[in-house]
Amino acid sequence: MTSTAVLEAIAEPTRRRLLDAIRDDERSVGDLVDIVGMHQPGVSRHLKVLRDVGLVEVRRDAQRRLYRLQPEPLMELDEWLEPYRLEWSFGSTAWSAI
Image 1 (tube, rainbow, N blue to C red):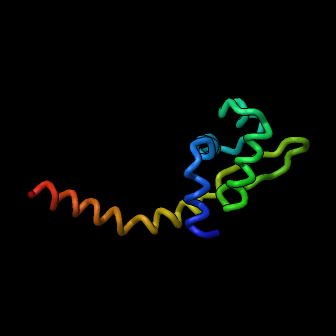
Image 2 (spheres, helix red, strand yellow):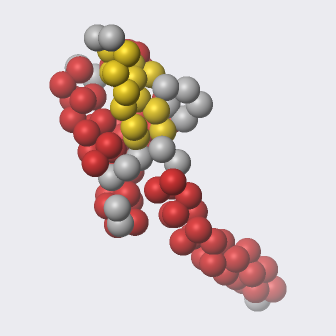
């Protein structure tokens, strides 16, 4: 999946909240509904977007679907941002000298 698709997916605040909720542990859709405070169909639509760009993985556990974070797309973004971070740290030093 492209970095652009990942950025578009995480631009939506509810999707970021869902990623925050599954950052450390997998959660069921019911848990995510409670956390986000949105009806199940809305949460499921957001999870589908996240799944389509590779940010979440789902597994079935009897009747439940459990979602967990797939960090690789975020790691790719982190790598892309690294040169900018270096520029920002040097740039802020240069700006403070003016």
